Length: 347
View 1 (cartoon, helix red, strand yellow):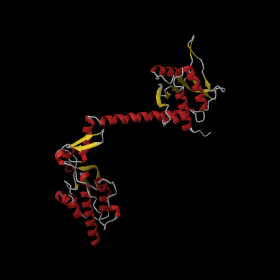
View 2: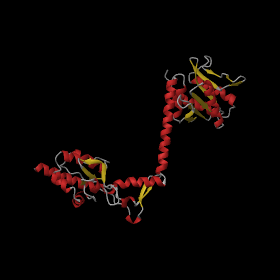
View 3: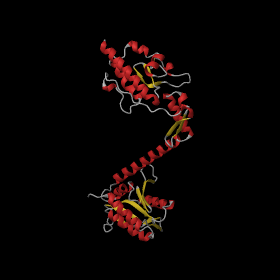
View 4: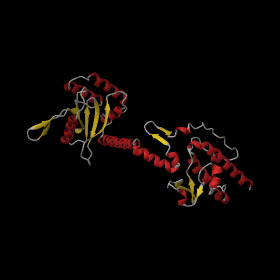
């Protein structure tokens, strides 16, 4: 059966709001009608209000129990919409779940909540909640899982497990964001930046993760001039050119191995690329492009100025390419590649 759960969710939201101030006994009728719309039938005994014996002389009566093919599927606790769902309501639902030996429980009040108890944990946890708002995207998904048209224990359990994993991931993301927004997090970010950028640059940064701003601590430096994107040389293969939005570091890692494997970088050029002044003149960087030993890849303050986890054959490659100088680098790299291309083709 094809059901428009978004449209059905809108209708349920309308009914819940319409009976917002009803007493719980009156809201019971509204809830029964909601489950009728979800396909369950009272005349078939699929929507019931059974008495559960507790001990010799006591009994519990849940608001609703939904069953399919004479097997209980989940229990429902109802709360008047105008009143907040309390811890007591939640504990009441959990006790019904225990007595009926059910994995699933539902609370309906000012929101709809699903609880799930796995075979492993033996503790009922709230896996999701949706306020009765037509725009709530989770609402249609919840009522789809609870409908007779779609219900199976396996499907509902998979839905609950998926929602729990999502909650865990969201909590993990929040914890990481909270850390990065803290003083310790800002310190951590600067330590990471110091791997790729000179410490004197990183020390000047004022980082505000919350506002997504990164400014210079020295006002005398002033704003950087607007860069001009250099024109690409016409005599080199298009695949060598920098791609739109490609970082200089990524461009270097992509194109230099092509030049070396294609025979464009000679042994003599390799020797020159080990020279600090040659690299400064050729690329406008502060370190030799290549070095041979790990000890040479670290400056006097212990900061790596070369990639640790990526090499060009046996050579360490300089990682210090500043974003604000990207167009200067691009122009110089283009000129260098053009010269290598012409030299090889003339030979």
